[in-house]
Image (cartoon, one colour):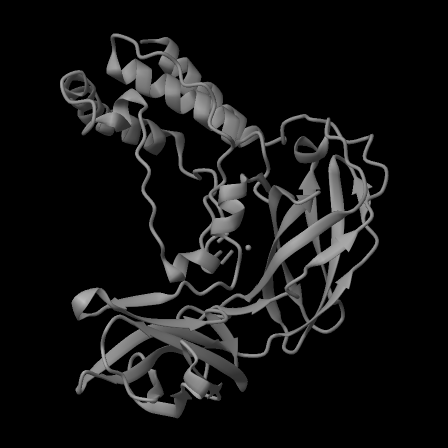
Length: 370
């Protein structure tokens, strides 16, 4: 998570064992029915048989507010048994055992997950036009700091007749109050329109309205962005060290205001994503260091040559009280490179969590009864 990337982090279930058992038996009836139907309709009930669908969804909000779920690479699924409940419990026990192998602060990620949570990215919004054309607006990023310049670019394709300028308005999502406006120009016949509008409004969510006259008719294009307060400055990384079975990476952040902060970043080696790292700490002016930790299960048995990298650094100031918003800041685009210490002492051993291990053992015992 989300560190949005990360308001919500997929944590181990923290529930009483009685509630865990109740939930398992409540869903078992539906699971059993779905499993019987799966044989005749495998497409609809692929969630039982283990088949998966590719669901590609783009969400601006989840892109940088939620970290990847605390999920290890999918293990080999057990073969379905004659009893759907037993199969469900065996699958749950196997998956949960794999998940708790890694601590929440150091989760392995694939390249696809790393790209999905790459940070402050804006996906261009395309508005279809008559005749097969498109009205597209592009921004450099999704979250902007107060008083930062917002560079806006727009393209209009197709056979339509369009004027030489477009009008841009920045308005509050809730009140629809206009905060700034400007004009996008099409200089020297370029195939795009460009202009700058200032993000001088209060922190919050805003709509960017781009208006064009196409074939003599007004057309409005709307996209969303957020304005963030200036949280402070990243000051690089300190000297990494090995402690217990973790590689500890100190990250310096000079916060403008005291409060609880959550830091997230991705650990890379030779251009390959290894893990999502995250931590939380109160910063009050007496310290400016948050420590990210990469667990030994991520780095052991790897041939680490040269530098490691921290990329896509995201820091959040957590709400001081219910109802307050979460504020976001981001590290340098290039991230930080650092030379690791001797990593030979790290081991590929599971993280120790007695409560989670007890839950996994209980699930396995339940599965064994079917």
